[in-house]
Picture (tube, rainbow, N blue to C red):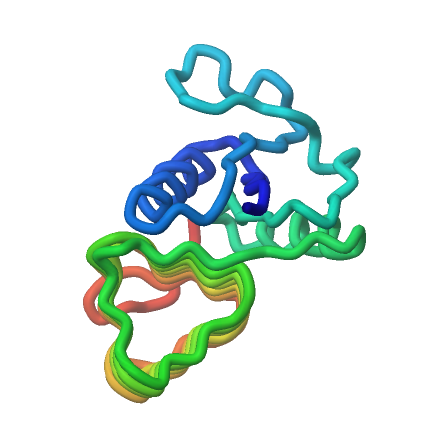
Length: 209
């Protein structure tokens, strides 16, 4: 049985821990070791069944270890993945037992699919994609390091790399969202979204803080 290490001990890292434990209850797969995190006191004052066992920057992966991405920030995921993969780390996907995964779904390395998520036929998820109780329609494409949060709905749409989709947002059919774009919570995207911008509202429009 492989040792499982979660990279990142923030809120999403603890969610990943809960997901790994839920999977183990149904089908024991890993010995969960704990977290690696560059802030050593990140769990201070937090009730958690596992602790921080080292730092990301100093960790040297072994042959018996696999890793889970415990970060939701698209940029943070890419940075941590690059650091650990350069050392030979292997990342696994976590798929909640209650997620609905259709036939012919393509899923990359290090994806996390939470409970109540659903993925339609022929959808493509790149590497390190997070789905937190989200719906992904048939033929949708979600690029590497993107994060789709709770109750969002991605129809037959195409998301680029490092896209963040907020809770309850909807990306309408055949729309494209460019790399590094941010779709705010509750927004409905009727038009294509250019790379690197933030959109908000119904219909979603460019939003500057």
